[in-house]
Length: 122
Image 1 (cartoon, rainbow, N blue to C red):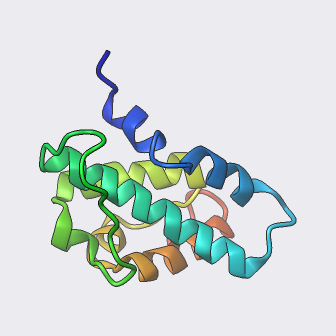
Image 2: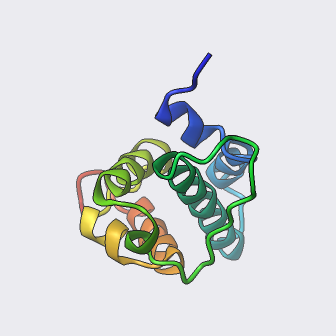
Image 3: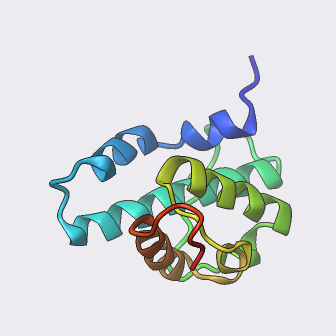
């Protein structure tokens, strides 16, 4: 059975475990940044794999924190990532921020957005 793009994104290595840890209220702030960055790296790797037709279980893709999203995936895939961030991290961010930011910058944007009420796009 072929997984849908949404299922593949959530199936990234240990993403569900990282999401659970992120939701705990006792997670220290410095760990939150690390978790969000790791989640973004995992999700971007899945989108790269999908966009370039790379096989599951092939070479490990690990985007660097300084990798700009628009340098490795197209606008449509960046839109998928934006939607995923909204659904799974409750982070309402601008599509342009997703496309034009490095993963490290995007992690900071996501953390800030998570502290805002939904619909209060930064």
